[in-house]
Image 1 (cartoon, rainbow, N blue to C red):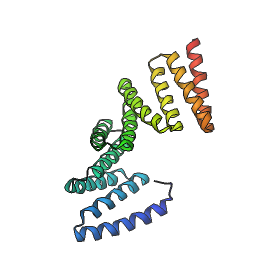
Image 2: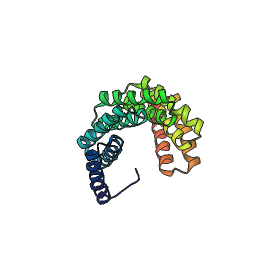
Image 3: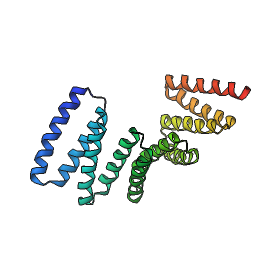
Length: 208
């Protein structure tokens, strides 16, 4: 969702609530699912996580009745994000796995790519480094197919962090250098500075 002011989001919320009331009066399941999903994303942006959870669960209920697997995968993904924002990582993992399973069944590469990244974040936060590495590598493979240099650079940075945490400083250095090179190629100045700092800190640790 593009950056919007709080006022714009509150106007959008009021409009969505009006549309939801209409859809509920008509018993229009597709309309209810669609509007609840939109309200859910508004509430995530506003930081109203309980309201967001309620909306995505309501949307999911409608999508299940409609057997709309694509909609279900989206709702599971958003619910995972809600739980991740609450630091309920176990529940977030469960939701992301459900989303991933449906995306795999449907062959939705973009959906799979997004969820691999979200699962990688969950495992990394939990310091489950082997699982995090596996997910980042799956994400990396797909981003390389798309030649998405900035995303590839970020993944190399995360993989570098994983090897740094394992105290494998040589491998971490190699990955940070790959990340730095790609960020430099895309003109991401702040990220170039960050990776240079990571490499400098790593060098100090290698010496000590």
